[in-house]
Length: 284
Image (cartoon, rainbow, N blue to C red):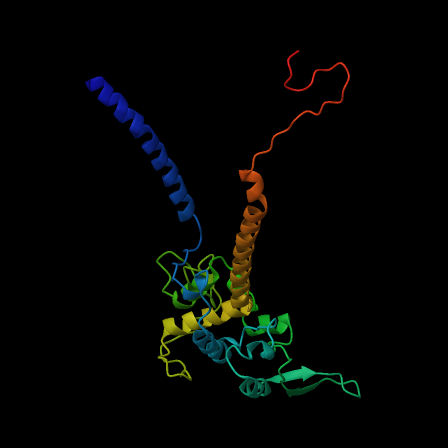
């Protein structure tokens, strides 16, 4: 009896030990990575039938315009894309006119500057990449149009990065012009901390805390990366509803047309054509 208990415990302990070894290997692999993975902040728009928080998107555009636009471009989005999302058409025209856009050439072949219009894309803060690198100690600020999709767990990464600046730990050398952020690959990032509490005043009166601004600009950048977010979910729900209705109709039609054949009885008889063959059901 005692030997059976030992054997059964060994049979159970073996797989547990192997699972522990494999889990230790996985943990070691994660520890070898050069950045911390951001937490899941639980965004409301991640639900299957949830839309984006457009109040937050509007506040996020304000953060982008007042904080991020001085270094980062948003070249894949035009002012007209924000009509009906964060502003109405009249308000967005005023926003576009506050930008200066280079256009041309004119009749004499020269480029000129004019106020922005709705069909214009957001202008880049730099004329070219070389100017951008020269203004940022050799680091070129990336375009933010697709940043929420270009990084793993994009929204969570943006929030964690913007709020994750801390002092470099002991033994971590930092080159001049770099700042320590454990969420950035390698830990050394050229962008300094950008958000502080009360840095700006929201138009809707929401307290502009560091975390609130980080969340709002992450929402805005997610919208910039996939402005079709709500339309895609709505179209998917409509397709599923039509598919369900079509399945019900097809099932009812099948039952209506084939019920008589499934419940009926069919019998076959052999016709007598004369000759030497006996008639059906007649004695030989």
